[in-house]
Image 1 (cartoon, rainbow, N blue to C red):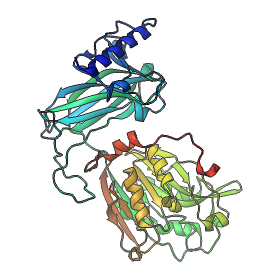
Image 2 (cartoon, rainbow, N blue to C red):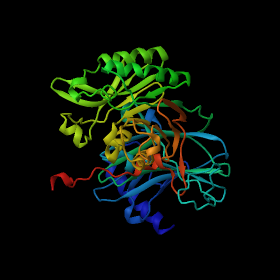
Image 3 (spheres, rainbow, N blue to C red):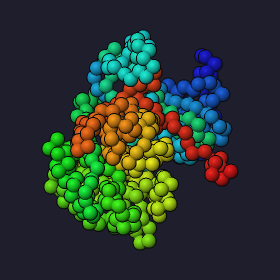
Image 4 (spheres, one colour):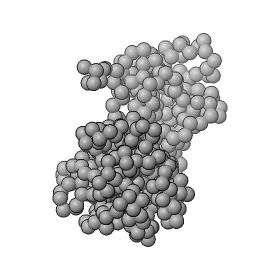
Length: 460
């Protein structure tokens, strides 16, 4: 027996003693159960572990890991499943935790593809290689996501994945790490062949247009009607209009063109959304009692306002012009996925796009007067979201564009002339793999920093 196994055996015996006074059914003192083996990076980091043949979800078996109060403990239950390369598989498990502060970092599942000799296997498809190193890109681990909360305090962790064609096995690791005083139970664990996912394809349209010659906000709104129809003719699901479109070119101040939300402009665009059976995001100015906000409004195919976002980061001109900042980052469920919105100057800072992504945004609609295009690419890349921009800036100025960016920051739709309506079809379920990293969106969810206890720079 190895030193590591001896340490693990000692740990589990300590755990048995600790739970003997509790109502725990038939706890085993063995470090293996039904092909599951308990592992830790080093013996000194090993938490207590055990399993029971019942007591889990719906009375099923459960695998248990428990940390004492020390920092940095790290342990996992591990099992190798035989699979057929090229097939799709659905993994699911139920998880229940106690005293675990960061579920996304501490209570995770890792799936690692292997060949029959336990080695990594290459991806079948081309991956994004920013360094242009060439050669073979090896398939990196997958990290199933936290899904719906189940009865009894259990949470489903699941995902559907295609095995690389050279894979013959997948190693499933069920973790509890970095959780002083924490406890986790894993139960109802399954890996089964699954049909190929249908995907969630959505057609994102952006409008590149300057409303000119109007005398009122209503005049400006009407100028967008033929462009929305053009997007509808291209089977768009979501149409993005530019920032403060009821203000542009009218020579009025912000307060003069502000209106309640819902209000006259949302009512007008609501009729168009209902006529064309699509979603519209419009940049408007909202009046709420004595305050004026720069907003992006999402209008649904039923003609009603789905939600609004109040611009958080204000440039000098807006702040000095009496516009108030927003203080939240809402996201909204649509029939195709989850949409977040930000407005213009928000794009100069990483926080708005990151907060929207943290809350589940898959598409960020961004009415923007002007911005550095490198920052637009960064916001799409660092969050692995589809970013849509609609701007008044001419396309030949090397400044911000009206277009759609993919998960790598590449432009997949670009308007070149005013009056253009461009559409990009994307699959919200498609994973983008980076060389040496894998699916960065899954990695980002599990690895991004937790909120630190230290005082923020604002307080120094």
